[in-house]
Length: 174
Length: 174
Image (cartoon, rainbow over all chains, first blue to last red; front, side, top):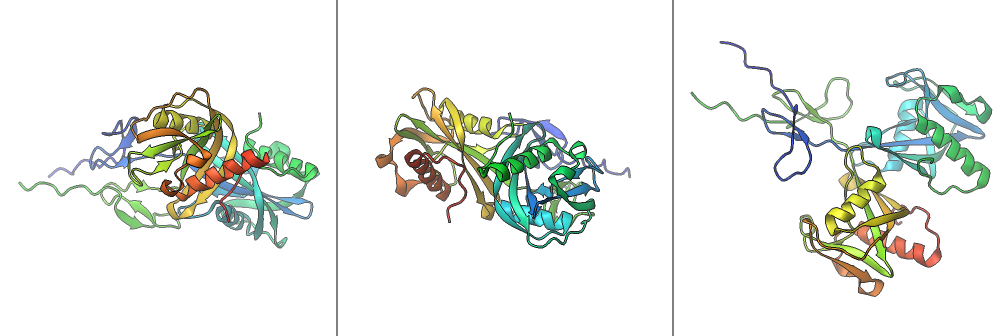
């Protein structure tokens, strides 16, 4: 007897009944894989006059520097997610000071919530997704080797908040 | 010949290889249905001294009043999503004035981004998800018949912004 054909998973792009957009549907079992934008949570973390950055051990942008940040998990508050990511990526214990910025990145279907935070202790160490972690003075930050544009935005916004005292929540720069 | 058993879709809760949390996996084809928190976008929309509310035609909370709001779509900016929802639910054309609030609702894995907006014209009409839409003066708002706690939060935060001129982005009330 011939083997059954491999099952296909949600591989068919079609408009499900009662919907008005194309979704990926499994032609074998009918499961509809609704895809939604994702929430990224992270923090600009300060120890005295230094800022925590992590050098990425994973794609995309392996080897470049980023803020500790990642996907929010189910049933997690956004500030708790930012603190979890700081621990996972830099073994850093942080205290949240406020919501620095909300960035829309529709090209990659992300909304980023970036907090202001401070380190509770200066002890940091790379987690599995980081090659190295470091506290940078402002004039040491590797501006040419940042992983993503929004890392630059957040650092600029945080520096502006420290300089002016206006720490209202920022949006994408113009 | 007996019918083949029905296919099951992502119904098995297990930790996929290389992951550290349980996910729903299809035992037939191996598809992993990653579930992520969802982003809800909406707006408090004003025409002169009146606020737009929609009476829900769908569960949950059919018959109760809500702000125009719904899930952000892929590749959509959050302000564009809020404007789309105002049109879909109330046929309202709105202009965004700023980000009123970011609410964490981890119990139901939602992050809500609620904008301040004004109606470009006072013409409104119920869309398919609304039984009725209406512009309410503040003293007419059906406070006892609001659909969700965050509707109350957003109305209170917007009223406070109008009264004080402080329209910085709000978070969950204490």
